[in-house]
Image (cartoon, rainbow, N blue to C red):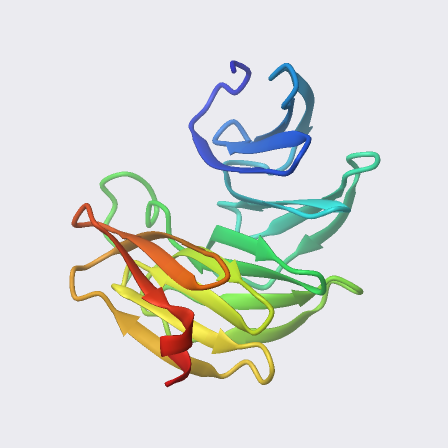
Length: 212
């Protein structure tokens, strides 16, 4: 599947399409019947680092600290979500909200010194008017991955933790410390939260254990 001319940083899919975000600043939409690239969107001014998808919209988070939202019907931009003070490294959505996690990809460029402080927060955006309704704090390093279900928001970070936030009042209800350093990715199903760690292992926890 050729088409991008930069690193592919993120990928997502639904029943019909695969959607990819790249360092060439574009989002590409691929037909899963024949794997052809059917549409390309210039989605950012620089790198597209994170992608999310729902029935109506494509979300593209970038190195410019902004998430651009595009209509799936005509691929026009319908919103630009500003507020983060660092790169948009992760995205997820549910029926009502979009969630974006921030951090620093290069801290100013390869080999550059890391700044003493940078934002590592999760913003919650209301899809009805695209306003930020909540900022979820707690992480002290890059928010690499996000997940969401009916009750909770899950986040994985370079600070070595998975944090769990209640959607009822946006409070943090659990912190899972892997004890092995960076947590690179996260996914979840009805019963478990799974997270990929920098030590080469995949760990998991029962969701029922989070409420005990």
